[in-house]
Length: 131
Image (cartoon, rainbow, N blue to C red; front, side, top):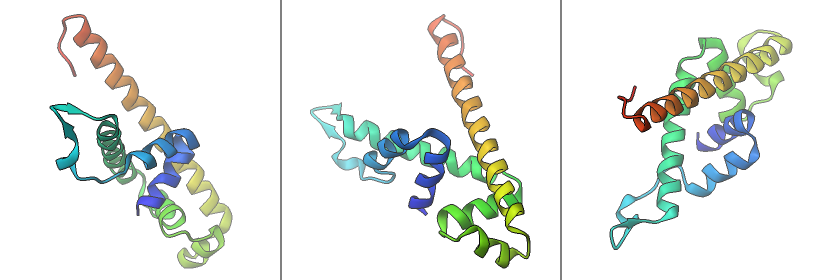
């Protein structure tokens, strides 16, 4: 499913961010992450990639069932819109619309999460409490 998640990442954030997550490695072995007590940049990317992957899985789970199912079939299983339509007994336009709606909802949810995280960091920087 990792390839499908990266395809969703491309749709949400563009190819540059997706390539960064791919370079980071979504799953890794943290035993080799330390060198004289300092995390390497690669280890930081790996952790960031893992966190982004986990966050995306949660956001996918929050989608309406049909949107989630169609996005998974398209992006994870690699099925065409036509194949999905046949499998689900719906029209191709319904499949296309559900992909667009689902990706839009993912993009909005991702951006809201980024804003909440930024706001929490701002509050912490001003001596306040985080979220």
